[in-house]
Image 1 (cartoon, rainbow, N blue to C red):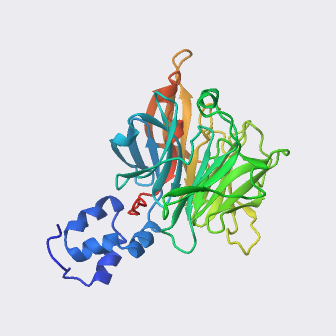
Image 2 (tube, one colour):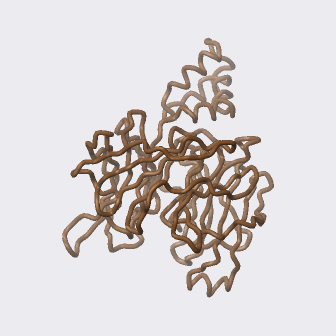
Image 3 (cartoon, rainbow, N blue to C red):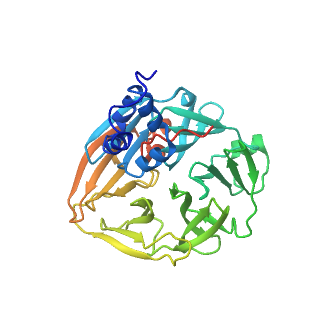
Length: 384
C-alpha cells in the first residue's frame, strides 16, 4: 500500500522526472505515495512514456532475456509458468505486448497468448475453432483509441499432416479478435488471400497497423502488405525497392516509431542496405529512400543458415544498425548456433556487443530462432 497520499513536489514536475528514469526502476516508485501510484497507472502517462523508451531485444528460450544493446545491459528471468508445456514459435510485438503462438510440446496443438514480459502478465486467447502452426498473426489497435487492441489471424488453408488428421480439411479464413468483446469474428475482404506473406517475415506493428513482406500468388515481385485495424481491411502499401533472390536477407522493422525500414543483404555479398519509407500516412504516396549503404569486406553475414530466422534489427540514434542474429559455429559434426547482438556503424565497422546464448543445431527443440524480437518494455497492461 502507498505510504502517503501526496508528493511534496508538484505532480507535473514528478512526471517530467519520471520520463527520464529507466523503466527498470520506475515501478519501484509505485509504493512511495498514492499520487505517484496513480500517475504510473495513468494511460496518458503510460503511452507518452512508451514513446520515449529505448528499443531493446528480447530472446525467449529456456529463460527470458531482455538486452539493451546501447547500454550493454542484459536481464534474465524464468520463462512464465503458462509456457512450460509449450514452445513459443511466433511472436509479434506491439506497445510492449507480445502476441505469442505456442506449440504444445506433446500434442503439437497450438495456443495463443498476449504477454507483457516486463509486467509479467499473460492472457490466453481461446480459438474460434483451431490454431495452426501455419497461421500468420498481427496485433494492433483502432485509431479511435490506442487502448482498443485487436488480434488478426490469417489462415491460408494449409495444414500440417498431423493437424489435418485431427482438424480435417479447412478453407482459408481471416479472423479478428476484439478484446472489448473477448470474441473472434470472421472478416471478409475481397482482396484477401490473393497474396501470400513471406514466411520469414514476422510482421511489424506501427501506430496500430500491421505490415508484412508479401507477394502475389501468381507473381514473384515482393511488396509491403498492410492491415488497417481501424477499417479492418488489407491494402498494398508499396513495392519492395530492390530485387530479392530466395537466398537474400530482407528484414522489416520500425524506424523512429512511425516509419518502416527494410534491411537488405544479398547472399553473394556482405553489403548491407537499409531503406526507409517517407511516410505511412493514408493520404500520402508511400515511397522508399535508401537510408544506409554499408560496405566492408569484414561485415558479418546476418543470415548464415536458411533453417534459421532472418535477423531482427533497428537503427539507433547514431544511425548504427543493431542486429540480433544467429550464426552456425563449431566443427563438422558438432555444430551449434551462436545467438548474438552486433552493432554495425554507418561506416561499416562491426562489433559484437553481447552473445545471448548457444544451442545445439541438431536439437530441434533447442533452436533459438523462433523468439528473437525488437522489443519495447512498457507499462501497458495486458487487455482484460
